[in-house]
Length: 239
Image (cartoon, rainbow, N blue to C red; front, side, top):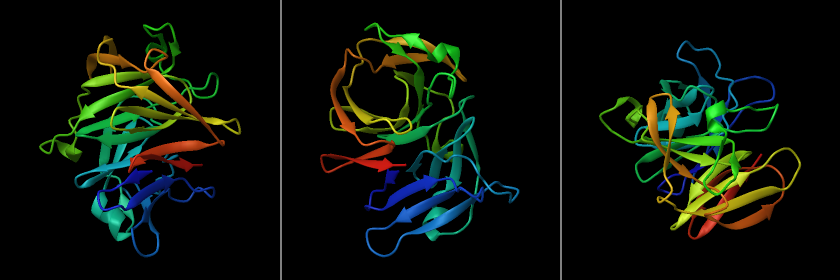
């Protein structure tokens, strides 16, 4: 779920019949349409496609080992889109977001169902048991796919995160699993408590989303996923 500068929405998902996953385009005016996704060799791209965002000429999707990259012009034209490559993280991604020149890519934890790497599961300074990690990359037009593949930071987060967005003064996480209530967790920015964590490209600064900077929880119906922030409101895509 992604909001473009002109008000166009991008939405993504997989197909129940194992045909190609899709990115849907909802323009400000006119009918919605979609682009079917493929690998470079022409075989169908059938990944979960649980998160989408864009920057410059590229569309980024949450993938199995990182962030998968497609050409934005193909998506907006409603053409079949072939995967250009990957921004690797070394582990499954569940959601992604782009904000102010940075790409954020996070994973999803449910014990025994969806595990995260052991070093992503840690005790925060507030004493919380966080289980997932959001890896942060800097946009760079000189780099392939518009993103420097060397991570610059990471954010420790709770379990069951299915999406994120940014408000003027904080970060919102979408928390859901199966048919239980969803939660939107509202955090303030916190750059005072900084640790470090090892990611695929080396050690980076680690920031925390935990009870120390959680300011509000909103309870929603089941299956909230990705979020966008628009005109003072958080908009929610449900599965």
